[in-house]
Length: 108
Image (cartoon, rainbow, N blue to C red; front, side, top):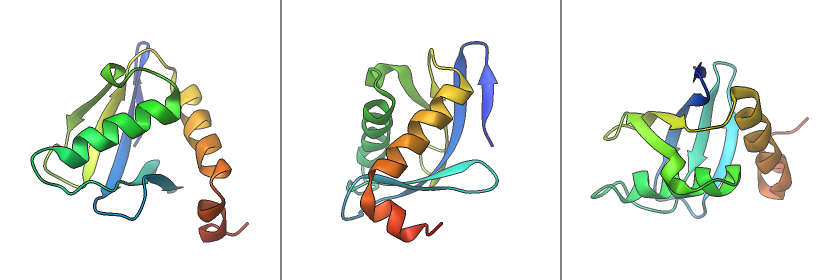
């Protein structure tokens, strides 16, 4: 579930570690983003990859992306500092569309 706290957005992310590439694969009907990362879930490597990849997709510094719950789980709540909820959703959705492999997995 997505939320907004003043100027910070909170998104739910389901992480798939040890994937072949970093990519956003889907946004389900409940507002949970599915994110694949190449890093393994060992010693915080997958969490670091999630923060870096989301920051890259959103065009912000990785310090503005914080995992606020689920550090040791696949389902995480992530705070995005300084971006409105609608902006976060738009940027993540645009990033999904730009990736041809994602489009083929989500036929329209």
